[in-house]
Image (cartoon, rainbow, N blue to C red):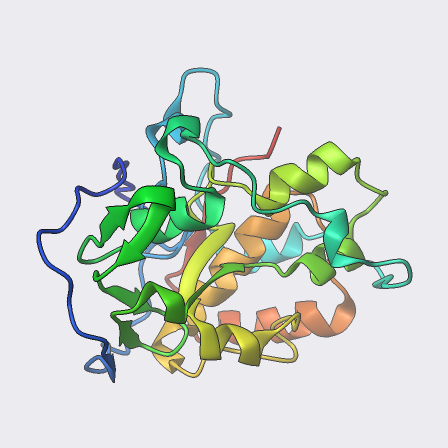
Length: 250
């Protein structure tokens, strides 16, 4: 949840489809963001439901170093992991729209709204993929990434989660950071790696990436291993103005 966070509904339908295009955007300024906790400055809450009465109150902004210090440190445990332990995609926040969670995220993050046909088939539209600073104009070339990958979540659960909690994480639209639309190529490159093993190719996004990773782990009470913590601390050295705000998941 970013400074000056906005809520918005799913975008209105576009009048015309755009031709397929995947191009690099101009490089961003190198100045670290001043506040980046729900730190993805390009993002909005996927639904007004995220700000509904009764939602947990946002915490005080934490410097990135302090937020990293709040992460529980533990050895990872991968044995027994299966992707289908985390049921996704479910019907999403708006049951009547015919779109599952994945498509709702894609719609919410569109820079130019696509046309939506029966069965939530998307044509046209444009998106910015923050991992690699690309503009994508074909929804079929997007992946909706779990910012902290499902395998990493399993590794980091401090006690085994219930099936309901795992499904809640896998479809979490009540934070603007848990799920993110990115180019399929960048998501496949990331796979299930943590920041000690992979960082976005767009270096200007590294401060935001670190803050989002830490905020998501704190939101879901997930642990981090030693190598992961050291990598995050190294990133924080270059992000003196980056802060983290998170809301604890129910």
